[in-house]
Length: 637
Image 1 (cartoon, rainbow, N blue to C red):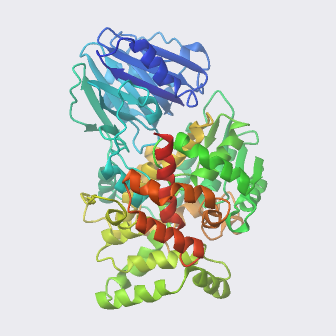
Image 2: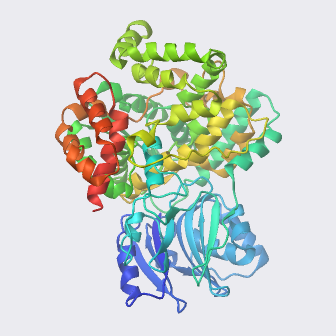
Image 3: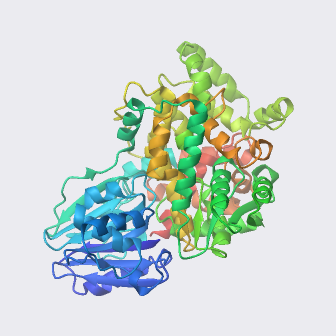
């Protein structure tokens, strides 16, 4: 894994120093080598390398094609590069310098063109390619958005980088806040592509390619992959086998994907929470290995949030070399001041904290870690799918006035009281029952499945009320095939929205902050295409999500070890905000400070804060969004 940055500019007196400054901010992404390159057409690129494949200097970048036409900086891994190398060798007599995937990728582009080359790849990446012949810069990003890439126009120049901190080193960079992006952040905890927190700076969309000429004019964005198109294709070319054959096929495909992602010249491991997704990856990884694999989990002193005991059961059964660490509240609290720098723009999924901490543990033993991310979105694992599957048909038939009364009655009962009710009657079967009841009550106001999805995925459901002089624009332009069911629509929206915007952003920044590479076998394109071709009934059966994935896992791990209620990767944030974090919160939520900054309605925020402090309401999810932005804003002044 690596960091990349660059610019096209004729306005700088010392462009080499600027490039050095920009790439110098990304050494956490690649501490093993740093190189910069420039061209007489005012094109400059830099690269920081985390050496994973071909540890010699032959794997360093920037790298030039044998033809001399292209120069590339590349962040990521191409998992099928060995077979692609064979394909190139069948076409030309190449004298290879090293054994890296980057050398294969640039020759693949040289022979097939960038779009066709990327279609052939299986991997994760963000890249920059300079074409000497056409005097044109091309940027590209992987299919699902595992690797980040920002770009934009500043000071009569075009700039790009893996992280915003690099762009901020460009002379004259303007830190004007984009209020549309801020509104999206309040709703979703994070900022979706193509937006960024700054005006005129964008995230490259997953699966896309853009080109910029040396005169700084941008060509039309081209997509070599569309998850929505693949979903529509899958629905019209569905898997026609029975359920058992689907389980066997998925098992085979996952085994091959894990095998392809365990190729490296450095030590590897796997994150293991003891849940379905991470246990499946660890089980298949161990099956592929002749030695004990390294697995990593994190435990908390709060039993409600502790997954380590479940992970240990799975690790013991599989016989892995398991590493766990129990963390105190102090360990987690000490991480909070680091968040603005690690995540670079406002990002408020609080599982960012344990993700960063478990990455630190893993980095002490390995350089690459496989994760189970993507399993929920592909195979129906989130509770919102189950809620919609069980209740939407009933909710949609309730008259609006009755829905309003029912929602009011549910929310009249405090979440803590609902939790007591759940403990008495369901024996702790449902995690955060009270919070989910209140969230479900909000969903009663939905008139269609798209509104239901928006309600279930929104932290702050009315950003326009919280912000000053802001009117939200909601995106609804999804062109679904009519054969795609309501529940599948939600899953696909998560694949194109929640997964890259939240989950993959969290994993990339947390792991890269400690120079650890994370790989996600579930996001192999063959797994994604297969999952999108499966009938929904193979994913959600009798009210249970990830049915097909569970049956793959049961081939390797007994059902009783992994069957338990779904847990988030959480921390006791609501309690900390009333105790250990109280002073930090009150400093950031200072009324005078909020009013002077002019982004938020301080009355709404302070009302929520006082209700949270008193225990009248649990507002920690909404307040965490505000707090993270405020901390980020202080860090960027």
